[in-house]
Image (cartoon, rainbow, N blue to C red; front, side):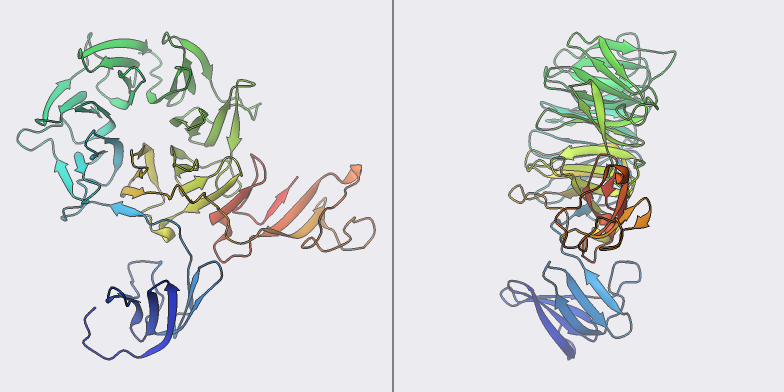
Length: 482
């Protein structure tokens, strides 16, 4: 920041060790005396989450680390404490820009480079150390891809394999950046639309198309058909392998197939409207195996986990108390927290505690709408998620277990049969305020009740959630009933 004029300041606040905010007439000066560096935070009409006014009158840091800013004509601004810093890659002319915005396939090669396929403009290679991105177009001389619309991408030794939209399979040799393209035929696959690629424990690549599931051997460059259904066209959209060596296939409309080690269909799972222990929808976007061996399924109507005992599924609600979120991709960080990209932003979710948090554009994401089956965890623990407006990356601290809620959740109201229970009146059974009651004994004829609650923090209630049960998360709403 250039020192070209005098600064009139009214408040100085230490926001972290050796970092200060200084409220001035033209915004907030962020100053680090050790580094001698300063930056200016200002109102930005293009960003809804920027300062509402540049004339700063007061600054305050609350006990949770949130920062409050009082302005002259724009009211009060609140900056919540975030544990994460998202790095965003979008299209543009800079060296760290992507070629396209709709990110789909993501993979890491043996040198640590991240390969990023887009649905609208080709392939990219990211050096995560420098942030430099090399773009590859199908129109350039010596092109290493056959088409600009890419879907499944996987690394295999010194090769990157890319599935295209109706242009077959590209196998890219990394040492010389030469490609070989395979198209549909009797010796390969039945459709040139390759939606998903997955490397199994054997080192072979499972390829999902609209009509068949094919196994490709990179060493012999040979193909073997595992499943085919040209009549019903189930669309083998996502693939996963569990600890027992069984292959799980997600389809677009026909549910989930589970294949045994011999690659024969062992079981099929579909929506059963009469059972809450079935998958919630037959359109499957992702299947994920966590570090404990659990198999998770992301659908067009929510998230569920396979239960070996019972051979059924347990459903989880992430957003607003409704099991309607479209789950696009599931990843797990080094601390065991699940990260789930959806149509309502990005969620961190701890299955052990039921606590989750929702991250949106207010937290630095480029959009709340992520892309189908687009995500990858790098060897160093960095998580990558593809969206319709670029790529998001971040690395959660493995030493800091996700805490979720900011502020202690408290019960603020109690109702029987939709009637408020008043303290000490009649047979309400409420002897003290719900705020201080350790327990409430209910008679057999008053087993239906409702709770009001608050997490006592300024973040929107839907951003933080405590899942009180599989079907009712205590977030997005301030009331739940039983």
